[in-house]
Length: 225
Ligand code: C5P
Image (cartoon, rainbow, N blue to C red):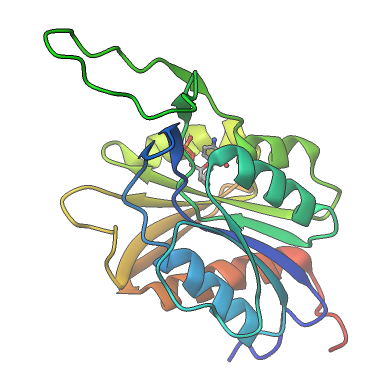
């Protein structure tokens, strides 16, 4: 019964997983399906928000009513999210953004040479979009991150929340088919105010609704529709 509590708000959601090009035909990617980000976008539209969905490499139908900005790599996502975040009331980084990319993009396909060892792929750091949002956000803007952890999820989550300067961090355990590509999810949402909200296993929509409940509470009184 959240109603249209996000009416008059602009929210930015990132979804999917970035692909970091090695050469014109190859990339380094990850297992994110985009389901959680798309559920966040759909539920935000239903709650009355204007939604910008920055979507990386997702094979899902466009959510009705959202503005979709397709991107490929982390650098493209960086540009698109920062541009959209300018006037946003909330930014939710549900995308799996590659921490590293190949250092030297090859303009032509890497070939195998008979008898020669393959060349190693050197990596360089990508910009941390969430950390930058945490540092540069305007007063009142709510910034939400996701943390996929395989071990010590809560302890790592608390440290990550502080490091990235976000208001809320949705911590999931990943691995062994717990999250990626599944329609359901379970998580603990940590708040910078020390709060901890447990969301039992359920549809990714259900988790999305709890995220928006927490965001709406931090945004304060609803705007006129
Ligand atoms: O540091 P880690 O990758 O675990 O952080 C995950 C969170 O940070 C997610 O919300 C993800 O969207 C965001 N992230 C980012 N830019 C990166 C790496 C992660 O915004 N380069």
